Image (tube, rainbow, N blue to C red; front, side, top):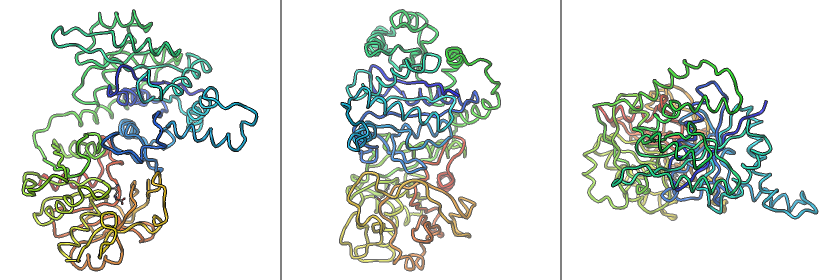
Length: 532
Ligand code: GLN
């Protein structure tokens, strides 16, 4: 069986929604009963996204198998309701280091090792291996960056070669561009698209489809003009106009005949009747879009609040839970470094502390966690938010002198949060945290058990520090209960205060498991308590 490849490239500028286009095409093929998956190529030199600041590059998405990936992988997982393995996020560093290692081992003995063919071969091998190993009908590959970037050239060259080698019946290109309209004239401009397609042709790639971002639906005459200048059939120039929600995009593309066109071009005949799939998806998409009058206001207090994408999965998870409960969720981000008047938190129905690292801003989070406890405001603390809630309790209820995390204060007299023992001798920062899915056991009779209705769950992790077990007895005697553990009781995974309206901390990252139509349980319970 030959996998069909769809390569998605970007033109004009970044931020046009290549990820949503990729996910939406994949979704349509999945709805048509095809076995699909996605790959994200990131042409930067980091080995993975784990060492990048989320404010610069958006959230680090953690996969089930422990990859620290680009946030687009999260988009794919949410759209497709399907786990994506970490090898589906290919970076320049991974490709080059593999080739350089092979050269040192003598695997190319006698050859001059070059970008073409050695680097491009390695890229193609990675893509093809995923297609074969997973026996996919379609593999959609999104190439990060904008055509014309130096960084992405070897990747685009590899994709070009694949089209030649596998033929147009097996490989096609979708190019995402922009048709801006200037307010004064109101006319949709085609020149940026023309230039971007030319740039793509210059490196030997002819687009089969153009996904054109625009504010209003692309006019017929604009489509025709773009078609004339780009060698793309006018019916394959697709309008990707602004939608109320990303969940409308698959339908927008479907209505323009993209699925028929893909099947025809690939010579796949006899499209299956997939109305049952569509019914399920429409229900989910509608639930995410439908207007709701009851509003829940959540304060998200953290340090990476200047970029909306820094906590993108947490935002989505709150929305999934809102859709499930029929509530609209309003999220305000509050910078933990600049918060001084904690009474502003009284204006919110709930407080959420997401993950984070380092000293900066931690003081404000500890005070926030304490304020939520004292004022009986529903609280959900994730990872850092779990650890800092424990610190707040140690400082203010247990009155432990200098209770802290050794991440924040190395010589704290009471290190209630400390490095994981296996982290003590680690020197490399990349890929060395406790990562990915781990089994967690929940104690019956606890709030956690009520939330998850199970004795065990599997959740994704990304941390270096944990609860110091020496203090557990003191905590539990004073009303903070550790209701779940992992690794044979070695690590604490959930904390709760049973006497509080809702006070829950989780060492794991529940947001990475939340999907439209399948809201993650801790978010649902938190939002439920917040709307009470
Ligand atoms: N900085 C903390 C740790 O490394 C929490 C990490 C996180 O929130 N992802 O354990």
